[in-house]
Image (cartoon, helix red, strand yellow):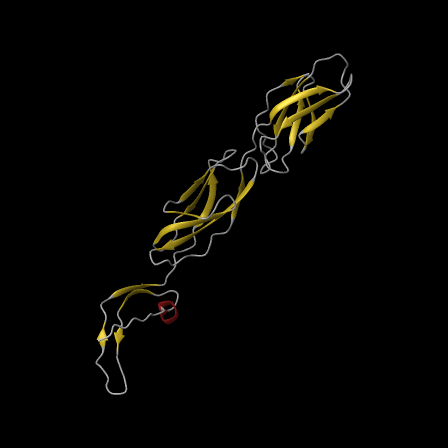
Length: 219
């Protein structure tokens, strides 16, 4: 006899919430005769997807790293699939996912779904977003721009677009300006006077927080 192979769509025949053991009964029939039923051994049918992972949250956030975690799904998940704006989709058997190499002061969005042994997959959790921390501005310099003016410049330290920088006059103990630029002309200074300046970056995720001040520049 010839071997015959056929497929059976358990999802279409049993529905998306079916799970349990099953057996197939097969009847061969042609124009001349009909065989008796042949019955398969037991096999498992599982069309039931795990529940959607809940309670996504972020921890251990730095200027370039963070950890995304969630609560276990209902059902019998065997792995979790993490999608984000930070990296390519990843899988893990853990209830958390750590990522490195991120850009300072930048928003990232994550979501996760669960999958079981039979590749039944939940829908994605609600997308959750957070910002990495702002990094310390670098290379602050102050250059003379006439007798009563100085041009102060600094490096962005790769902070994300839209980062606000606070320029501080150490000599006068006062904030000069907040700006998204990385250079500023300070005017109204006293001639023949030494001035010191430092800069810090504001967190885009929380405007009440700032990075540590940069080192001080003297001119």
